[in-house]
Image (cartoon, rainbow, N blue to C red; front, side):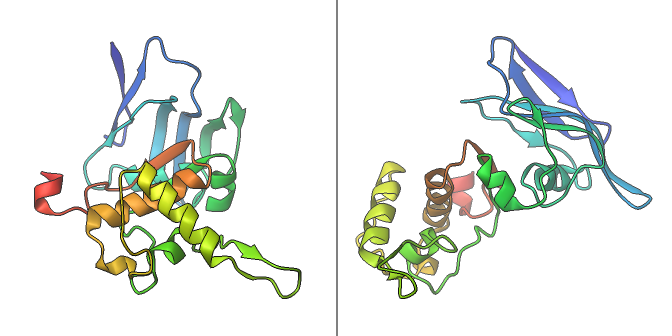
Length: 202
């Protein structure tokens, strides 16, 4: 049996199975106000290991605000936000990632003209050599990116090709593999079919 939680904003969340373990992420009566405007109100949500949770709602229901709170872009102004049972206030996406929460947005946060391997390590490049003349460890980054993509079922002949030449699904797989490689325990997909074609998403 699966519980269903509905916030006053109209967003519906498919919640936990009765026999699930303790949640990784949990919101209790969480809300977000921007001055006098209440974007999110009294949301209860629990995200469990090895479970897919779908957030549904009309435009303006607060789905994006909810994602931004969990991903560290915004802070909640009411209720509780817990990770592994501990109350938190995340200030940045880096704090969220440090706690194992990563978000793949619909624009996939990639640089179209950069090679696949550069996009995989964008902002977290591997280096080698003594300080202060450390340089990029290109061979290691290519090998790591290739292995992680193969683990996702994506086999590319040339990791030097611009990521913009890949299909939407391939770019999304790169973004997901990147998040998992850097330690994501909770992976949030914002509009997950936006990067796919009509055939793939239908």
